[in-house]
Length: 411
Image (cartoon, rainbow, N blue to C red; front, side):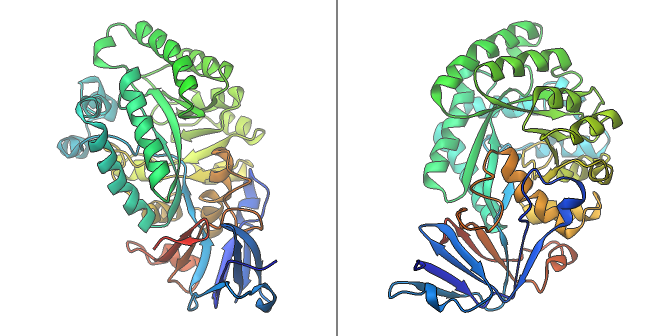
């Protein structure tokens, strides 16, 4: 078969070909090809090889000289809060002084402050701000991004966020995976009637299902937000309607949300800085991905998730950015990956698996993305580095030279 496009003169190519979820020590198993080429047909990987590619070249085949750059699959950031209005730099000093994040929320700030701004913002204002951030993420190598609602906290404004994501998905090269997260906090109008808000959300779930704007539902399971029983009720209702479920779990207090996620067959349980030992063991026996967000620990000066214990127990990990205005306001995904190396003590190979194969798996994209195998989307990066380890060693700069999505050069 003749290729549409061939990238040649590549120094090295790194990717995981393990079948996801990639667990435990298998996360280190990265295929490395020296002096390879990538052949692309109809936006998909046609062939990756190290021999002569002339048999794949036709009259219309385009050739691209990688000039000895390193190639990896496009990064998949599988947890973000992309669509929101405004910022929260006014809370920065409170956080530095040690005011607990949940105290700021309970005083009407935090998430609720962003909800006020997001409700007041127009669709176009939300779109413009989200697109600006998405452009920056793309420049750092993110080719697929999960994005949550959760700053509307009523049907009208949650849908407004999801529709912004849909338009971005239609217009922007980055592939967006939207998640409905009205269970992000209890809005001010329901502060003394949480039961009423849960009932409203449960009623809204059926309407959200009918919009076809998302396949996922997420809940913030945490002290002062939604407890274990409330989280179970919401997610079981979502599952009954055909949604896939995930949850913010054990971020601050060890409530057991991670274990609940295992029981519910969640696609991922996220944060996990306060996870219980027994829940690590339980999750190792499931296909649920443990999604670790080191940028949040860094920004809030909190402890980091025990990623090494999780891998040694045989769990499957992903690493995500958690871009949001309150606890991780950065679009630099390479910085997040470096934090995973420095503070989670993950190896370069484990991090690459975490931001490709395992991230693709819990977003339901394992057959399309996550590695550079024939038939998968031709999403990949050219990095101006000599080897994979250098990506984490030389931190604080952008190593991306070129980005390709669906076989098209984006930058």
